[in-house]
Image (cartoon, rainbow, N blue to C red; front, side, top):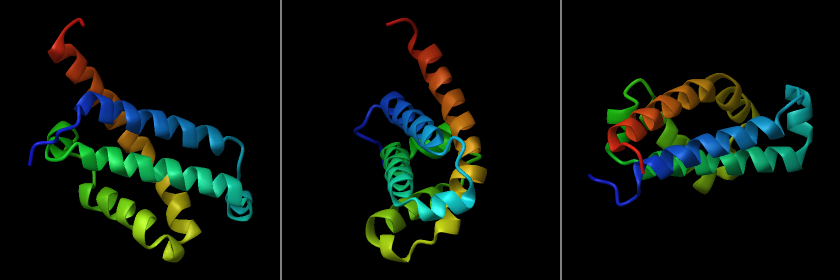
Length: 121
């Protein structure tokens, strides 16, 4: 299904929110993350926006970034929106520390390719 959202904007949203949550986690250890509700809330909200932007890519997501776990990304977004009370701190921590760097790299590459294909503005 084609997306009605600009894929470049969605990719930029992914990158912006990964940058934000990385800043929130700068210098934060796992135990501190679990105890600091404000940081955890900020990180979860950014992660939710990452998942929504990925969802907005529609079928373009797997085409632009085929190496990403799309079912997991969309599933995480659903958990954050609908099952927030059952999501573990460990899942959030592992996702942002171990899985998001790959998505960030893929999104940077995809955005660069889109900009090249579109040419100068």
